[in-house]
Image 1 (cartoon, rainbow, N blue to C red):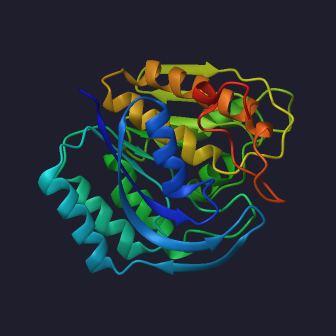
Image 2: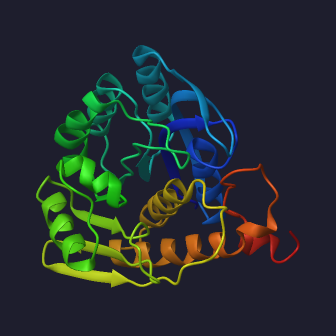
Length: 268
């Protein structure tokens, strides 16, 4: 029996991030994807032209309707946009008893802001405490903690522990923004700290990496894997997707990763 993984996030019309990336990643990692859309975006690989938030009442109806009929084995939360949406999602999660991955999506790869500044406190105060794992990158961690961005591993470890104090069961702090040859990620939970080392891949096709990683992580958690194992498997999956990204020819900016690299092989 396959796990059912619900993604609550925005739609990316370019297909590389958001709901579209989430469903691809969930499918590619062996689970069935469900979706609740928080916002529509008009975007491509170059930038975000417009954002159209979904009405909160309709957002709630999407969540209620899915949960009324379908068993949910894990949830991934991505782009939320506003405090009202964030609070509605937090309220819904209180009705579930499954792993929750929160990817605090704040800024698109193009630099366009996807989370209102006044929504950060709601994200920090009502949603993050319900998370099994949160998966911020270094700029997102700095926003959440209202501090400067970490520039080395010591600061990463310090900030990861500060994020853990906000209430999630675990923090996966992604170090891809470090100006180093390595791209280390740090998993911290109560009594545990583990580094995941990843070699950098020379490609501009990195749109949607955070969405893809967090969705793969939710997929593996929903399939019953413990957090450290699920992180390792999700890291292997996203590393392969980035390494195979140049097989795709999508757009003139930051193109998507290759979500189906393991299925398509070298036929891109």
